[in-house]
Amino acid sequence: GDSVTQMEGPVTLSEEAFLTINCTYTATGYPSLFWYVQYPGEGLQLLLKATKADDKGSNKGFEATYRKETTSFHLEKGSVQVSDSAVYFCALSGDDKIIFGKGTRLHILP
Amino acid sequence: DAGVIQSPRHEVTEMGQEVTLRCKPISGHDYLFWYRQTMMRGLELLIYFNNNVPIDDSGMPEDRFSAKMPNASFSTLKIQPSEPRDSAVYFCASRPQGLLNTEAFFGQGTRLTVV
Image 1 (cartoon, rainbow over the protein chains, first blue to last red):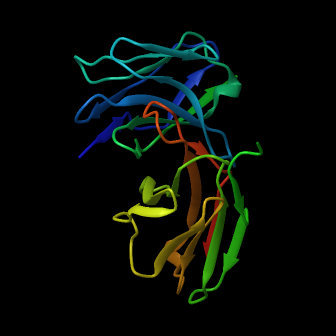
Image 2 (cartoon, rainbow over the protein chains, first blue to last red):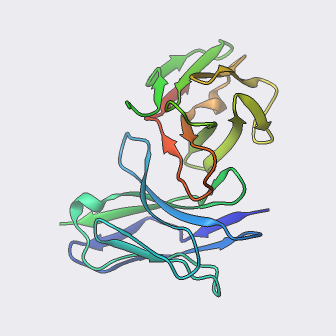
C-alpha cells in the first residue's frame, strides 16, 4: 500500500541555519504530496503542497519539489527562525485518504 | 467558516468508562477522517467517511472503538470501555470531494487521558 517515510527527529539547528527534512514515498498512480506543520498544542495545518511531478510548493520561506524519479519531496528552508520550531509531517494523497509520515520534530535554538 | 470543530479539547476519564469524542466538519466537505496521535506510533488513520458512509475502518484498533456519522455536520468516536493505552490526541479532519489534490483540514484535537 501507499506509504511515506521521513527522517527521524528531533532535528536541532541554530537560528539562520539551512534546513532539510527528507521525505520519500511509495504510491501507485500519481499522488499529490503535502507538508503539514503542527505547533505545540495545535492541530496540523497545511504548509505547502505539490500536485504533479516537478511542481514546487512554497510557503513562508519553505520549499519542496515533487521528484517522481526519486519518489521524494524534501522540505527545505534557507534560514530558519525560532518560530519554526514545530513538528513537520510529510503526506501523500492517493485515492481518497491522506497518508502521513511519522513526523519530524524541529528545534531551533536562538 | 470556523474550521473543523472538535469537543472536548481535553478529556480525563477512568479506565472502564465510556468516552465520546465529537467532531463538526467544515460545511460542504464530503470526507471526514479520524486520526490518533501518539509518540510511539505517530499519526494513525482510524476510520474515514465519505458522504456519511464509513469507507475504511481498518485502522480502528479494537472493537472497543466505534465511530458514527449520523449527518453531514456531525461525527462521533466512541471508546467503550476505555483503557490507559487509549491515551492519545485524537484528531478529526475533513476534506472536499472532487479534487484529489486538495488537502485535509484538521481540528484542534482532543487530548484523552485514561487513568
